[in-house]
Length: 260
Image 1 (cartoon, rainbow, N blue to C red):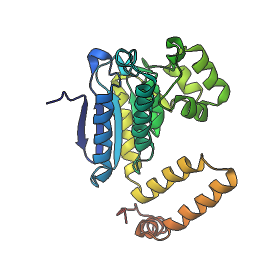
Image 2 (cartoon, one colour):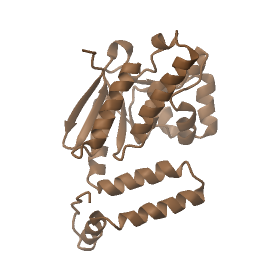
Image 3 (cartoon, rainbow, N blue to C red):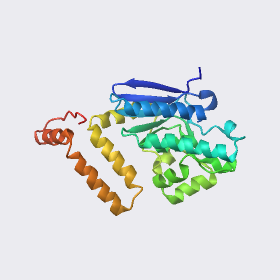
Image 4 (tube, one colour):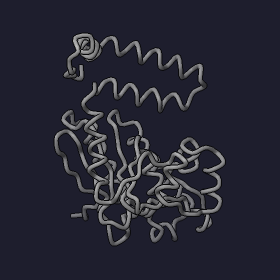
């Protein structure tokens, strides 16, 4: 039986996914990516799970990067396949119709930063560090880093981090928009869960539509994105949740959404 590198815990509609490979600082080997992909696929099908938190085991690393020990002897084709596979897994996280929160508990470098960026919201421990150090290895980010980083922090800052390979602390990451909030290490998961709890109190359909509108819209012109938003806005009015939410508002009541 193969070793398990991804742990899953579900409590009150919130799934906590932990990358558990501490001896390698939770590095993303092919096995880790395969297991993460299976977990995300299962969570998508599980109607009882409303939100997902991704974190790393231990206090040193969220995910310190891809598996350099495995990459060093890769052929160009093997490296291509590795990149394609990682992209597929990260896209499944980004496209999951449920909110995904990265609880970054330590080093988020290379593939680790790319994993965090594939999530919707990033909560960081004050001891966390971020970076894309691939340039120091003679390569470039290959799991979406050149694309998601520039979209999050802008072209100039993205190129600065990618071309210098430098590491930044959590507060700096927050100041440039890479991280949403920085908290003490002891309250990291508590904060991530509090954000998840707030989101899952709302309509899961509206949450999925909002996530889709933002993600798909970023791939479009402003005009196309606004037209796509109109279509998803219209879809909201075909749901019971829209009637529940607006009726509760008018009656000064708290809505209980059904997800239909």
